[in-house]
Image (cartoon, rainbow, N blue to C red; front, top):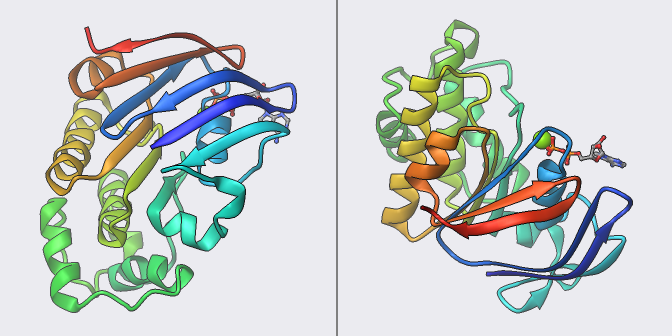
Length: 212
Ligand SMILES: Nc1ncnc2c1ncn2[C@@H]1O[C@H](COP(=O)(O)OP(=O)(O)O)[C@@H](O)[C@H]1O
Ligand SMILES: [Mg+2]
């Protein structure tokens, strides 16, 4: 899926060789070790200072950003919630991507799948933190990318909620043949869900391996 060669990003990241295969990959490492930087390189939010990254055999620099981001979707640490109702928050990703809007039925089904039993007219300011998180997940599920890049998807949640939110994402992705590259601090999450764990330390790969 992704192949990295001789990558450098400023003084922040240095990865001579890394292959990220389809499935569920967890990126671990202390704060400041370069995890977010790596995810941002993978969807071309930033570009390498040196070296190359390919996605399914094509250099990222040859793939137009909009096209890449339809397939490789980054859910950042602090995902945006927009004023207005649920419908607006579900449709907005499609507007950003110049895609046809999802049907009412598709949106309602997706809300059900993330266990958010609200109408599309519900105002987001009435949602709890956990409900907002699930709304954002419903948004990215609807966009149906081939690869989800999740940056500490549930840093705002407690451990129990975190596990259930991630379980939801992983199970759906596996069912639909999508891949996940996920930054998490949770060893429990990594142990349960990762096919492969990549550990960063000071911008370098310290360790990688299959789930033990
Ligand atoms: N655009 C940038 N330019 C220079 N340094 C950066 C940039 N973004 C992040 N950094 C630095 O790179 C290091 C790694 O940051 P980051 O990837 O956000 O780490 P993590 O997500 O693992 O906490 C940090 O020391 C951070 O201050
Ligand atoms: Mg980070």
